[in-house]
Image 1 (cartoon, rainbow, N blue to C red):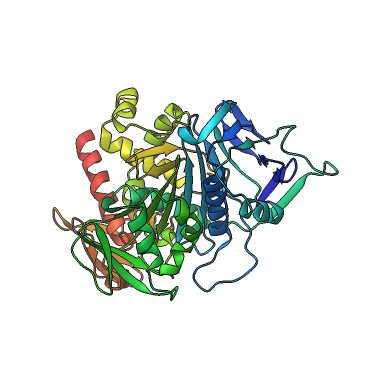
Image 2 (image 1 turned 60 degrees about the vertical axis):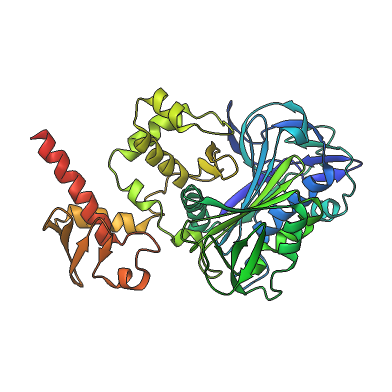
Length: 442
């Protein structure tokens, strides 16, 4: 269970939006109710609609919808921007609203990450915000904006599945491998999104066709896979503000995708898992980086250098830490599993945030990696060549090819590497690295 404790409910009253904060880590330490920002949102209507869209994703369960889920979005103040993030209850949709410098005019009190209360009265008030007049906003306790009738503390207790936290880790790793596949200006973006099939479960590909995107029922050159078009539904209320739509995906057009709406002074991004029934937490994209012995120590070193920067420069971190870029990248993956790193596609850079959840269960959140290390410790791995190994298990001997990540186990035959390496491939790769270390020491 995750416990949220707020000094009072978030409110929107007479042009003042007060976002109440729960506990979180900041640049000045851990605070029960951090205060990050007070000032104007220069684009009130798109900001209100974007915040409501992020909150909608936090409540949604796109695969087998069920009522009763209530999770609060996460906000990070990076100094020159506010980032609001959420994850769907089914683990297959990630949402983020980046409110950038041009849309903010006020004072930054601190940098850091916390949860923000989004209650039903606030949701109703946000839905009524219209026009483009400025709106005063306070993120954190503010005598002008966070008020209650009786001063009572607001407490919420909600289930926080491990797949929810794993999803944050998987998204930043997967997104870092995406390319920009298409960009549409506002009118074409609106036409494309409104022209998608009405059936929420429809599975299509978006294929570039000149300056447009064409919807097809099969993969095409340069296309992006879109499984479950209904998972883009939260973009609907933002279309009247859309300046452009950018679509990102892997080079082969398969798997996950990301959809980014450019709004006045802000961006709204949705990342979708490969299938509506499939959460990001099962992708296994982080396992190879996490399996390296030095990664945890490198992550500790890199973590000390982070200070809620809105973008993290790989070269700068490498220079400051004395580590090669490849190890810095692996360290960022490790930090991502603890909720400390995200990835911004528009800027092609990681950013620092500290999810307000327990970071002590990284190994437990990756059972395949835990099983692989047990196989190595038990002496179950026998290297049979430069790129091959045999792994002895209770189910028999598994033959592994490390470079291509293939194995004779059921997992590999079911997924063919599409959900990360199996425990036998991981064990073989760990054994190879340990063997190299032993030979070097000898």
